[in-house]
Length: 186
Image (tube, rainbow, N blue to C red):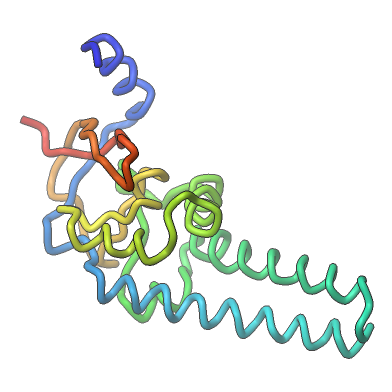
């Protein structure tokens, strides 16, 4: 890739200063599994309540299926996007003592979190491959984090310094991918 293209990518990816954290501030596989387990359990439980309610109100009709589908979608987006994007965070993030940040060290926006959720559910990589990636990445980013430009850090973590955007190239399942990543400034 030519230097001009990389400079253009850098300008697009980092309109604000970017920061990095100490290695121990990035959450590893076990705490991320805890977050995903707790959050998925909460979202499934609340979604099932809506499904049971829909079945009681309108048993075995197409409306029941539609109401259930809308309820599941609404619950997952509300819980895993809106609540995660708020100052309150999800139960999984609270229990694990974690928060999600963007490259500037701030709370990511709702569209970023929606894209991250969509990548997890609909993306070309499944959940297991995504979490396996965490164990080998220096900043413990999952593939969904790389796509969304987010990091999962300890809730009390503070930036260790300012960085710059780098574009390492990865080969994943036979595909060559390039992700923007924060790297310590030279």
